[in-house]
Image 1 (tube, rainbow, N blue to C red):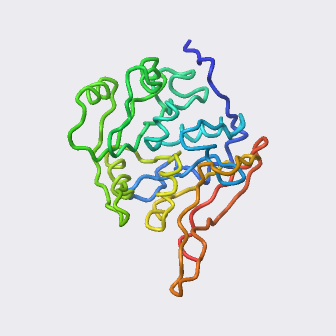
Image 2: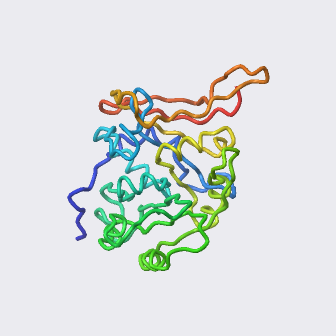
Image 3: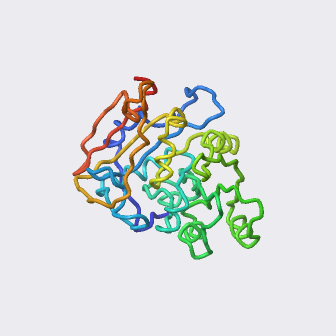
Length: 279
């Protein structure tokens, strides 16, 4: 019998019910669209910080919330992170819930596809990166790397393809500041056309803030936020969308959620809702 690794997590059925209305449907009831079901999910402190400082690994979720996040991964076809998170954390981006592929069951059923947004292809991954270690162990999938670079490192390409991953080219939008940003609609359409019917966006701060901009927040189907009972203090990586202004130039709220539910979960609280697109 196939046994689960020691790092397998348990997330009992009794804890799953409250999440169901906020997750991709498991039947064919979802309306047909060229976009995947998109969930934004992250853990934050009481002062809206994701980390103590840029690049610092910061644990916020308690054990129950951590298991919840892995269950969410099992319910989505892909996990999206930014390259900063990939560089800082060397993440596994797999699902460790007991009973999914690689954790009590052979094959990769229930394992999401990691998607790393790396516009300039700066992530120096190797065969020793955790993602590829998990591939070799049959406990995770190889990443798709989203980039705007046309001439790619052939060694990186070969390594990705050896494990079943690949680079995916996307368009960039030039900002008035002179910088560039991923076109989220183009990216999500591309992922859906490549077979990802649902994706969850986990971070980091830049990725989350860009998706919460007024131009893109309508692409979100669900928002699930874990709030930890701690303040990280000044200087943290803060999630705060850009402020909006009305026609008179007065500041108004950047965004608001609707259909909101709050769920105590261990010492944390989990907030589920949908973006309210108009006041």
